[in-house]
Image (cartoon, rainbow, N blue to C red):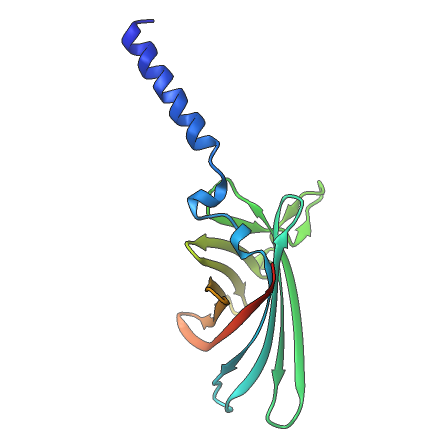
Length: 184
């Protein structure tokens, strides 16, 4: 080995070591800043009139990734309420800002996403800066697609939520809300 090559090789190893030992949060793609519990409200404006929603979101670590659990309580104008709760775990994909859902076990016991061609939602998450986005792709019996997009953007007080439901490029519903962090 020549002296110049050894110097270049040592420099390259040092750079790899420094980059490899940096925490994931330094890249801006770690879910850790989102970990916590949040509560808040939103208002949607569907064609049938305004509806208020109480929201709660809990994001936390799991053994091999993180989970997002959210509950929406819709208050209808006739006094009825409707409650829906979802929880999805996510695993790393080897790409620094994209996470696969782990919603069922395959025949080998590994956690995997659901299959949209079987009418199940295909769900994945991505982190871009201060925004954690959860996407759900659904394919109906006519072969048309629907996307549900949950953007959760961190703020000084908690997070802002923007939910969109899109079918074949047409926005069917948009809901926005503010949630405050109640627990880290």
